[in-house]
Length: 218
Length: 218
Image (cartoon, rainbow over all chains, first blue to last red):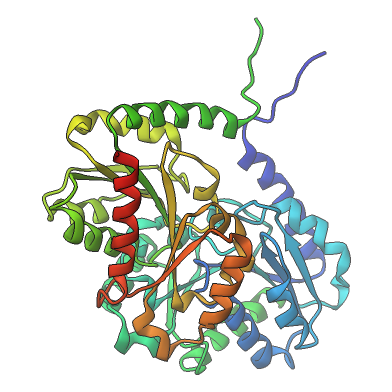
């Protein structure tokens, strides 16, 4: 018997991500792959985005966590269709996990799908899932050295939300360095300074996202 | 030709970790595998620990980062032998990376080796490196839901330092829940509430660590 060995896990994943993408295109669904360190504010951003845009778009959410349904429970309270993926130890979401989750949604009634990835500044950036854009958060308590130390996610993202700006007076965060190093890695990166707690600065994000979605759906 | 496939990466890693451990035992070197999310304060804890214990023990440090030498540069300023491992994309340090780094040290002149792992709350907990103990930080801005969402690291660690206690008035962090959920995962977990910025609470950590090292070296 010939043994077939899958030598390139990323290539295999990319093929599934492309199939997901075709399905999303058929239904004109704009998909965000949302990434950050643990506790940087992803779920809070999803909640704020739902509150701001739910009257304009039909939104669905996929929550990725190693275990539990904490985040999905938070989203379900907003009466938004949500599926929890439990990766069972894996530190990222991949294309196949998304494919497995999709039958739970009515794709014909979805405009925007937000996928909240596992909290991890490394691996999620390596695995495509069929998204239109990758979006990442960096929170001020994490420090301004993160672009230099974890460059791939900054390179892969279309937008960076610098979150927890309300904590800026209490932490050592060099905002200019964070902006400069992020832009050096990715000159097209759109940067927003926000607080998902106070909602400060989120208007710019909502306007930018709305424009991206409307262009896609045209 | 027969093709040999390494089917269990973790088993293969464990064997190298055991070899590292034998070498450390020969030289009576106490090894800490230090883990946390990005930006939780690992390097600050290493700096504080060096300052407090450098007259008592001969300390060496291995810094693990995907790229760059930011953290190793910080440690080198303290005149401590330090090696930077650049994982080149990998989200954790494994046993072989440590083995490759060891020739840079004079093991006969080392009492305590602190290995600062890549900032990641998931994968580092899965890979043994030959350590005596795993130690982790959780910083208050990350939120108290982390034990429930990333249980393995809490289960594997001997000590948990809840860091950035100075930010407690400004963040939504349920300290009691964090303590309760951590202890439920690991009843032997020693928990310290600290600020590596102000040094508050670090005395308890230093005393506990000193006792562990002295017991080992007896």
